[in-house]
Length: 260
Image 1: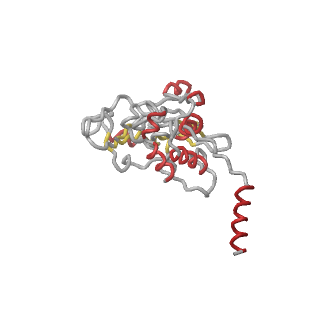
Image 2 (image 1 turned 90 degrees about the vertical axis):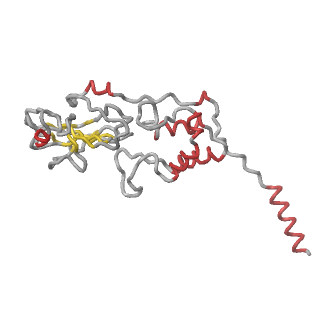
Image 3 (image 1 turned 120 degrees about the horizontal axis):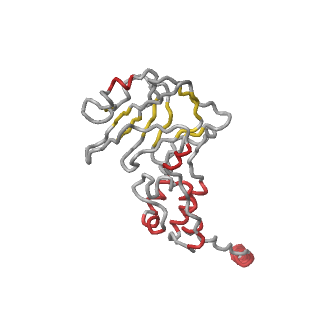
């Protein structure tokens, strides 16, 4: 009986002498979640960004909160294929465990909007106008129209560079004409001008601009001059990184591969 009495007394002392921890500060969209979405998601999930929906407004995010949480917990979003723990990679787009936990706690506690005055300033994104400062801009000779409901299309376009000498580049950006239908683009170096002979005056055998190239451009390439996919960043070869050459002669061409 004494043992049971001491046990009850001990519980009472512990319960009465220990301060109860205060509830942690609530997680809100305006203060905590919106900055994460700006940093990791809005490169694509914004008007004109290529994603099928935007993640800038609270109502849009709240509607998809469970799917967003599932995507970040399973690391499907933001898209980053490299596995952690194998070195530091430039341009890494991985959310930290703490950031994922913040989103999880926000969803679990009711996904409150919070005070809109705590929203971060809207993020600004560079558009095609940023190309105005480029030393060289390469464009297809004409537009290519994709038929509605026609399935995936892999198309190559031969574009001359006309360099008089070897060139090295430090930055390259590829901009799609319509990011809502372009899945990805690759700018590849054609060392012999072989792509010229796969069309007649730039027109393929099917009578359309360019030529079909599912599985590859149809010749051996010599590297890449850039690429694009939803959320892609410009190729930025910083100081100390070897620049990639684009050797110069008038037949050198860079075909752009465009699926869908």
